Image 1 (tube, one colour):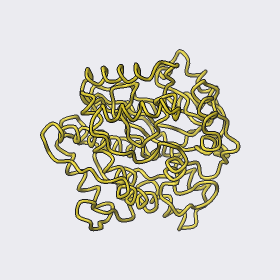
Image 2: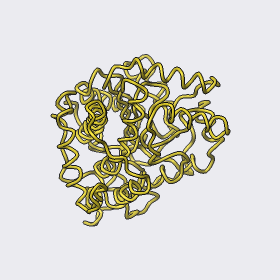
Image 3: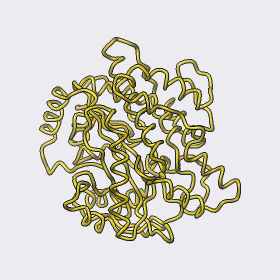
Length: 386
């Protein structure tokens, strides 16, 4: 969820963030993937993060492995890449390194947006100051957040430009979610949704989901300052929006997407996320108009993506007509392609015939149990490297 600011005055936090954005190198990239820690026999969630962390000490994975709220979850990071071109290999390496680390510990890995049956009541919050604070201020809200996602960080030069890129990205959050949906099962039931993770996380947490649009750094900083002065937050990481200018790094962070069972689809999804971020920046540079849809309309498409993912329809909010979600994403792929070629992402852009949610739903319709379906997702999470 983020890093503690250690009690630093919020004015200084904002000043330092502004300075970092002004000095940033465009389009350097880092990706974070969240994985479930599982008993390899039952595939239940198990509270073993501390064991994984201890095993990572002194290895090449140590600087790229962190805890993420619950002890049955682990996050790995690609680390800062000069452009997207380095990301696919780094994603593959991290998955392979993590698999090699957890296997001797008697653990397996899962990478769907939710665990299909393990109860939140059995998960333990990890013992760090940051997560103890989240537990204190959020209580039931944070206890229920047993979810797994994939986040991209893309450096954007210029504080005003970063805020405007984040505001532009709001418009395409539903398309990204539709592509990534991987969590139709939760709490032992077929939820009827394609992304139960999004419903759990964004509908529970405060300051989460689709943010308002901000037109400048000053406007954004004024809002953050308001939250501090009113005691609404004591750490900028408590803005849990689905897209945000990150105040610890000079990046725009996209954090809306479900975790991806298959490596190839994680690589493709992150190629789209990073390319879209860079494309919005280029549009601003070149004076190309970008939409600024109201929150209420983006939320309509968000619900459609939660409910039906790529199998459903999304509204063209500029024209007011309704198109298959796949058609909307295909248009988006065409729009980002020039910048994708520039940053080394184009070879990885593809729209799968079925995303992870569609495949799981189809297997359930054939009569497969949740246990059988999840076992299939676990088997594909860490294929042979290369």
